[in-house]
Image 1 (cartoon, rainbow, N blue to C red):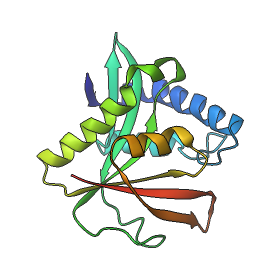
Image 2 (image 1 turned 60 degrees about the horizontal axis):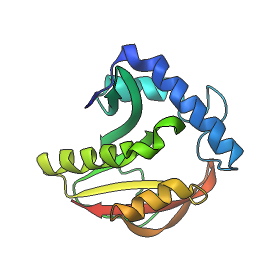
Image 3 (image 1 turned 120 degrees about the horizontal axis):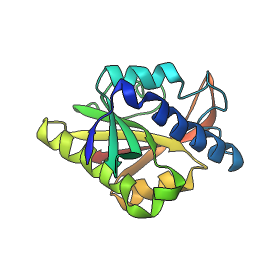
Length: 166
């Protein structure tokens, strides 16, 4: 079942994201930071929850994945040419390693697509670090179109930017 995350889920979600931070460090992927203050911080996760932008995949009373789906904040406008249609941005997709072969990431991404369709959104936008092979493959598998690369002035890494028409 996919539903909004709530504040009672905070520490379970933080633990999932901390494990993924470690995995990214092990893979030399600078996308997510290594300390509590780094991305995604506990404050960032709390904000996702309180703004109803964080969704969880729950099975057997356990969170097996999360995704942030938010209205376009125009954050890409300063770093890369992108669509200016009504959009959602997808961030912070996190699936614990032990659940990765269960298509949970695909289910969460399909949830974002269906939510967008139901709400009159025209396009989905997202990015991932160039070294994040798993996410890059997932975007291509799900029909997202690679639109180019960008770097942030104040954040490490180089990012592949993707869009998908709804």
